[in-house]
Length: 466
Ligand SMILES: Cc1cc2nc3c(=O)[nH]c(=O)nc-3n(C[C@H](O)[C@H](O)[C@H](O)COP(=O)(O)OP(=O)(O)OC[C@H]3O[C@@H](n4cnc5c(N)ncnc54)[C@H](O)[C@@H]3O)c2cc1C
Image 1 (cartoon, rainbow, N blue to C red):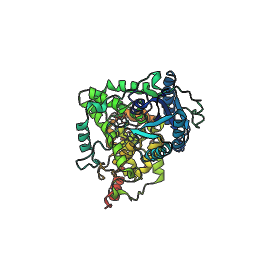
Image 2: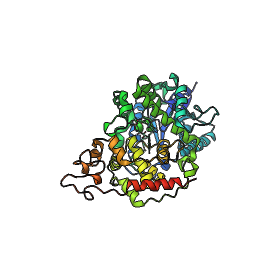
Image 3: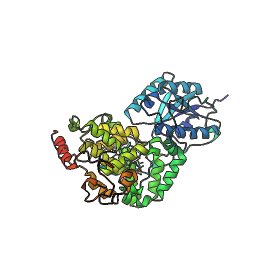
Image 4: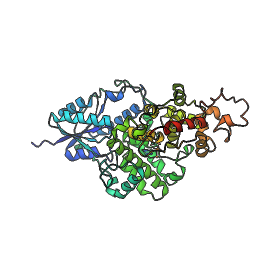
């Protein structure tokens, strides 16, 4: 009798069933069993109520429910993937395992271990492109080298883009496309050692991502003009959905291409930045832990721990910085303009190693992504390959006046400043008159540093390097 071939699809940062490279390829190879593995190496060190774990968990439950309706299941496992994936492949009789390629150094090492473990049983790990529009070898310079400057990379990226690159990778959601299967459901959030988190839960699943996309499409035409103003909520807020793959990058690229105009063009440019940072991390994995530019590798950061604590808590006395840092703690999200400003402030006003800020973001951002986060931090610290020049230093007050002109964003996150008018809210210590009953130092901190003085110190620090 003919036995249909079986393929395993190992989900990682592609938590959806639509437009899915690994699933589409696996379906081409046989009936599919889908699986996800919680890796203790990745879970250790996270808070018990980490929103990202909840986001993953609820996205998995959604997928599981839909696969169960087809008589199959999503196998949710807990352990070292190099043990779990080969064991499940053997149990399911799968001849191959399909997964989306991941560009992070730790993920690459893990995938190499899983591939080696599978090979001992004669099974292959097939890694396919899903996370980016163009893979690491697809957009190269004329000398076949990776680009290290964004503008020519983006030009080459756009020139290469054909409709097929953003085409949907269709998945057949039919009972005969999946392996009949039933897992025992032994792994739960509780057995993993976690509790639920309403923020992660709200962002979970394809429907939540589709809703965000629909809401953004209604305002995409204004994106280029409004994207820098945090109070205006003009960006897509799809970064967590992209990070966990509840929507595909191809779907977003198609959306950008479907709209004419400067807004959609500017947004597509941000999706290209995302590809750029992924390919940089792949080609230059050392940048994950040290300055991309050798000249800035040994900067002797003189910053103080108490200043780092004030920055983390949103207690620096600079209202825009504090509003952004408080939003991060409360919601796990921060606007791109503010990520740039608070990163610059930590590095060039507080003179603290960018890697400490990077780690703080990694701990709190719902959309935390090593490539984008490291790229953003190295840009702000001027240590990256195509970064802000080291002598360019954001003035936190000017940035505040420019991008939050009436102080609406500041007042949303620092209610203690609610009574201050649009002139004084950016720098209360410079205000000629403060509202009755408001005392600086009691109701809101005095600035922990003087920007002008720190700017000079930063210039001296960077300027001394070879
Ligand atoms: C210091 C710093 C740290 C950052 N850390 C992260 C991070 O951990 N994860 C993350 O996804 N982004 C990070 N970014 C990039 C950017 O701030 C966020 O992607 C963006 O704010 C997310 O909001 P959005 O979805 O509304 O973006 P939109 O403006 O709607 O952009 C659409 C998508 O494009 C991508 N994108 C936009 N800007 C960038 C960028 N500069 N680099 C790479 N991709 C980009 C994101 O996937 C985003 O969802 C960081 C930027 C800085 C300066």
